[in-house]
Image (tube, one colour):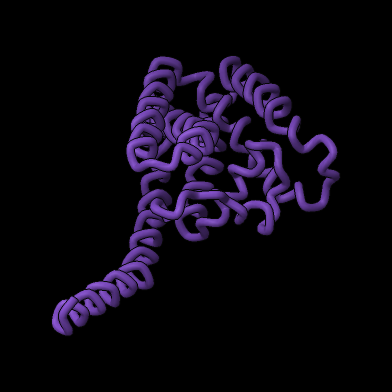
Length: 206
């Protein structure tokens, strides 16, 4: 490699570092502000927001549970497949949210509340049954909240789901480690930074 090519390579690398250090945080902040702004009209378009909330929850669940299966393959094609399946899961959730605007916000609120409690309290609670927390409490709370939303308090459940899902999405944009903590609760691990940060990613995907 000649001196000029080496100089160009170093310049390109410095530009990419500047993009990572400055532009990506700005994009995350703008995305978080957009989520908060968009969440303000949930009660006026209940069916649309029910679909958006269900799509967000379904996409997060699909991505979290499929991630380690596809990342362990160690190829870029597997990551593309992961994103495609996540998008398909989100579209399926949106379909259910639009078709079932009464129970779905309650179900999403139950799942989101379970994750929020798990993230904030898992470091204080015993980890003996941490692997059973989400798979038991999540569906149970989702069914209870869906029943309440179906019988009464539809607007209140939609508002609660919007606050939990929209607020969680906005906070995850600002603090990416929060999403890792949410994934840890889904996988049955305590939402501790030392455990959440230990992710075995292939070197060519980092």
